[in-house]
Length: 141
Length: 88
Image (tube, rainbow over all chains, first blue to last red; front, side, top):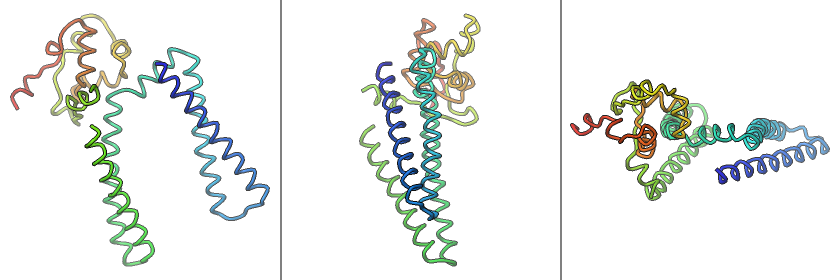
């Protein structure tokens, strides 16, 4: 359980660092009077992730103060069925993503070469990640 | 070593209850008046996992089977029915 507590503390530290970085970037962007949509999107996206991370941070802080909550959280995170479900979701999900990328790629070829090559690159990348992870876990397990 | 054992002896997840082991967990629980939540907490899993094992949607890992057997003070074979597996 001590390892788990350490893990939670590390997650809290990472969340705080992340939030400080996002806040600093937001302040810099506000000072420099940005008005491009890419920066606005990135900051909005970063802030959204930060908000979710803060919710988890509050949960971790609560668990660190209460042994019962800590045990419950430990069980939630280490439940073998949940791990199995996550593995199945990952495996099925990546196959569905590849299938849709390929279908979208085939259709997009009639409309735009740029979209076609972007989807081709995304498909090849996804397949490569799947193959590399397959080799890695086959050796590891 | 333990993780290898876990993966080798592991368990598969079958939708609709096909292919999972029959168990006497529900029976033993009722006899001893233990709730799913109490058993789940004692063996370190969620209540949903115990439910899935009882309704034969999920087969417990060797480690979990051992913990459940130990909790009831019996053997794995007494709780899990391997007869279908032996036939295959």
